[in-house]
Length: 369
Image (cartoon, rainbow, N blue to C red; front, top):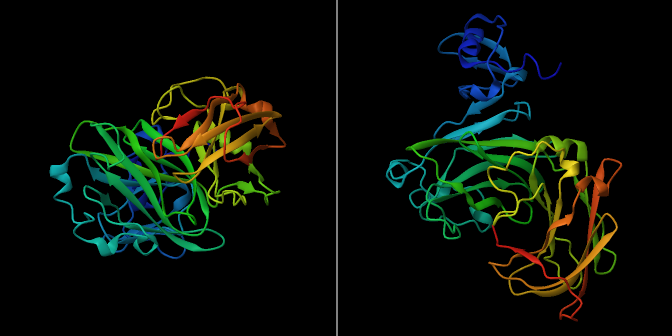
């Protein structure tokens, strides 16, 4: 069984490091304390030269902890390993950190791509990762009291910054219960996450976590046919294992509006968030839960457009703004599985004009992230 015998508790893992012998684990993987990696050698094993630890194969690892600064080369780690970061939860604790953006702006990843330092932001050490096509760098960006787009006084903002030319599917987690599964094409913008990620946990520090799920993302945007584009959500069975999620396409590059993108929500909720940071438990498979579908364009654009999935077509008109950045339906289909064919789900958008004709449906709206 692939699931059994893969979780290794912190105590037994340290014993393995010292003795080189396998140990049995009876504790759940979620209870593990993340392990810091002092040195990762080219053969893909962990070494600690100063204490004489023996080599340990990495497939058993589930989580590792970032150092407070510098760059960590994780290219040899298995993709399933989660990267953890011990971050402050209060401004008092934040002021003591050395990587505040207003104090060391030069170390902010992707600053040459328009990403600017912001007050109240803290960034993690840089992570060097790899796909089959390229090496790339990642960084976590944390606002313990929220950024300027955060609408809650007790909220926090959390983002992934990626300096790469591909789309990634990833999970961001705050503490033990608040998580979001997201997808973004970082060639079009170096940062993605949520301004209202979750309510701020109690305490002075919190463990933040990044888990890369697909590198690159398993989606496909077909070449536009006039002002119509089709976006395919591939590997549906794998997406079901990820759980409830919100996936954003790259720009569809339609002649009438090149900035138009699609947002697919799997297991959406009836809240300000399409999929919140702590999704309500639902024992139904994702295929039996609703499918949300939205379009978004640059603020100021006014579009009459049609969204299609599973043979259903709906027409909307929207003037896009920061507070009404996404327009569509939270429950476009009552069961997402109705639109799945051959382990894939196709959604489509077509621009019909720039003015309403009176036959449009009222759209559900979502703010910018």
